[in-house]
Image (cartoon, rainbow, N blue to C red; front, top):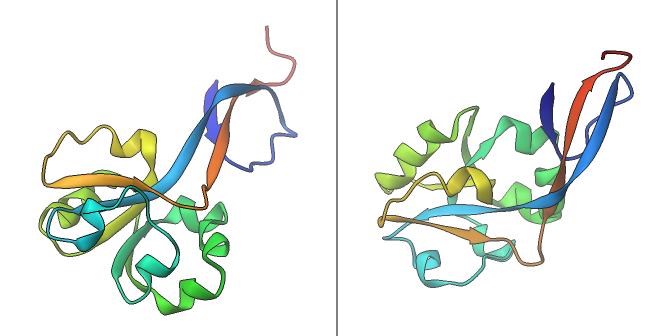
Length: 132
């Protein structure tokens, strides 16, 4: 059994779409001007050093940015937010992530800012077909 996030081919599985959605946004350091904003737009990240999750690229987050993606400074990709959050905490850049993952970091030197317009995905709980 597992929980899959976003647009995923679940044809090999039985599944239930969960009623909760995950918002994408950016984890920013306190030194960043975006720290004081309620939300972040595509334009806000142009020229900024950002880290993006490999799954974010695979799930179309880069596509959501459209022409702005090429104008961002994608400094690194990551698999674990912990690694990117450490860089954010040091003020090296901002991490594109989902709100649920960012909520694990109760650090006053960082803040999660959702994207506007909203970019959200649903989760699906899946299990192998024909399994009791």
